[in-house]
Length: 171
Image 1: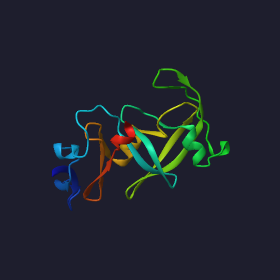
Image 2: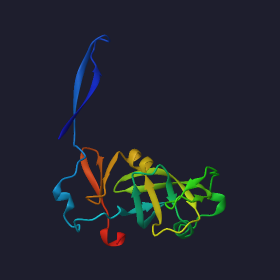
Image 3: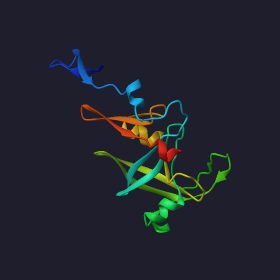
Image 4: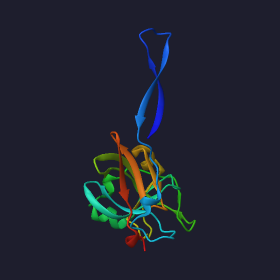
């Protein structure tokens, strides 16, 4: 277990005292590789509950700053153009082409008991994924991802929870 330090007020306003808070560390070990085929360079692809539906083939991309939703999922969720807010910043796709968005929508993304509101940008482009969750989602969840271990770990209360990727879906 790691120890986090924070300052706590004593009864006297000018006095400060260190308060020790025990929280589990978010880390990965060789045991976390169990169930994966090693050596690999597979993407971290998971199933998430988005907008109340279980959604497969969601890419966790810690290198991206934008959460993306592709047309297949947009249509399956029954979203309509009037559900979207305007989003007019250009985006670059994986092949470095400029992609114009349809708009943006905020939807709840649930992992276990944790729910995070995510602003998805809807794009008209082909992808083997239904959506991409990125750094903003990881940061809001307080999570750490590992493509080597094909897992996302996050704290829930005083426990470490994990979301396990699907190597077979990735391949």
